[in-house]
Length: 209
Image (cartoon, rainbow, N blue to C red; front, side, top):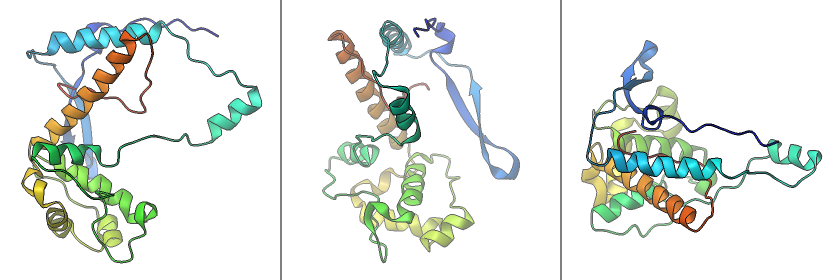
C-alpha cells in the first residue's frame, strides 16, 4: 500500500547534538541549536533534493507473504569497505593502508573477522579517533576481553598504525567522518540525477549533525 509522506521542515533536516555524562557515567546525547556556517544552505538544498527523490518512489518487494517473512527474519548482507574512516585518515596523512583488516592488532590467537575481540577493538578504535576531549576509557568487561587497558590499547594501535598515530584524539577524526559523509551524499545525488535511488544502510551528514 502506498503511504504518502510529507517533507520535513528545514529545522528538522539539520540536527546538531552534543554529549554529556549522565547517570553511571553513561554518555547522553542532547540537541543544541544549529549555528550558521558557510555550507548550511548547500546541505539543506541537498537534503531537500534527496528527500524529495525518496518520497517520489515506492519501494516494494514482489514476493509472497512467506518469502517476505523470511526476509524480515534474516540479517541482510551488507557491502562495505572495512575501516573506511581509518583509510581516509591514512589518506589525510599522505599514506596508504596496505593491510587487509585495520582492526587486526596482532593479538595472540587472533581468529580474523570472526574473533570476538574484533567488534570491541573496532568500537574502541573509532572512539579513540574521535575522542577530542580525552574522556574515552575501556569498560572493565572490555579490558578483560582484550587483556589490556585503554592506554595499552592506544599504544598498540599507534604501533600498528604509525602513519596516523598522531591523529588519534584530534579533530582529524571528525574531518574523516565528514569526508565519509560527503562521499555518500555525492553518490546519492549523482544517482538521483540519473533517476535512480540509492538506499544506504547508514547515512549521516557530518557538518553540523
